[in-house]
Image (cartoon, rainbow, N blue to C red; front, side, top):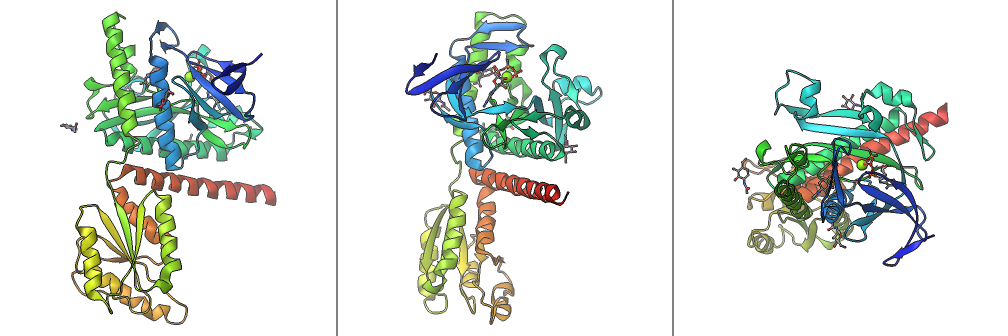
Length: 426
Ligand SMILES: Nc1ncnc2c1ncn2[C@@H]1O[C@H](COP(=O)(O)OP(=O)(O)OP(=O)(O)O)[C@@H](O)[C@H]1O
Ligand SMILES: *[C@@H]1O[C@H](CO)[C@@H](O)[C@H](O)[C@H]1NC(C)=O
Ligand SMILES: *[C@@H]1O[C@H](CO)[C@@H](O)[C@H](O)[C@H]1NC(C)=O
Ligand SMILES: *[C@@H]1O[C@H](CO)[C@@H](O)[C@H](O)[C@H]1NC(C)=O
Ligand SMILES: CC(=O)N[C@H]1CO[C@H](CO)[C@@H](O)[C@@H]1O
Ligand SMILES: [Mg+2]
């Protein structure tokens, strides 16, 4: 039988674990409802305490984190939040591996690697895998063991390619969350995540949840201020006061996590074109900027024919303290970029629309500068926008996260293309 929960036709329960239940959605094949339960577990349910409000805090945390990752361009199972305690997700067959990613050595890593001091920093990040097997306390597995297990989920065999994709994705996800938490002056110490195979698309996606049980967070890099579930594990005695403190910490996380979705810094790209004949080229720059969530403004001005106007337009964008990257689009002799660069402390990128006839000669007007000018030259309009995004991304984590996810997605699509080609030629 099915029950209707606020305009959702909830079908049968597909799965239930210690912290959540998964329901089929009758009218939305391929999607499920993930419902959190109001209880906390640690040490494999050795400790169980009801904690009122916990589920709603967990939903907030998961929803915000997944939104951040989704908006960055990471493929996740998350679709949208549904209620205080539930969200809608793509139905996945879960890969029974926990991927652990560490920046700072602490916790079980120290036990398994005696001699390593707490606080040791991993660069690159340290990756570990654990087979999800409660009965055996989730043993650590090597890459070879994962391959030997020959998992097959939703019709997808988990082989070399799939393991590599999860490995790379875990690193990208960690770096995105690390960058986001840094805006709150908080160190992401480590994290554990799980992947699933989307039953509809057969794609590997980040699934399950990311809540404070999934990571260690140390405000200002200070362990004594930890805000994660470790506080709960460390409790000597579960008193109502202690539980209140744990709950306050969780609330701190769920409040802070909302701020991860807000940009900490503004930024914009101003494209100056010498003539409207370059409009199509400039529109490509604008389109690419928009994909990074960057506001992009197009203006027409010629440094040869209207230098007073060029400098007036420049002053307009220098006048409001919004960090600005100028892109100069001028064909033939590019006077625009160099004049801008010689008169502003903001970065200037030349993106000349070169033509086959004279392009090889014209490009020198963008490359060879008088002394004292630091403008760069990027020929492809998309690449010019990407470079502008990288500059803005230095201070704007939302832009940085999009760049990071896009790097991952490019890597994955090359990997998948190669895999397909190999399969064809076999
Ligand atoms: N999008 C999804 N589609 C299908 N199943 C999911 C999805 N997200 C999570 N699940 C599964 O729902 C089940 C219940 O989750 P819960 O976290 O409560 O389990 P658990 O008791 O903690 O066990 P586990 O050790 O597997 O996490 C888990 O098996 C989890 O993998
Ligand atoms: C913290 O972790 C517990 C344990 O899983 C979780 O249920 C709780 O909702 C989490 N709180 C936050 C704010 O993430
Ligand atoms: C993950 O990637 C790192 C870095 O490339 C590598 O050292 C490690 O062996 C990989 N692990 C798995 C399980 O693929
Ligand atoms: C950030 O952390 C540092 C310690 O690394 C601390 O001194 C500083 O006050 C913190 N800043 C904010 C805004 O919390
Ligand atoms: C991320 C988030 O805030 N999640 C939601 C949890 O449930 C409530 C109630 O609907 C939503 O308002 C929250 O936004
Ligand atoms: Mg779980």
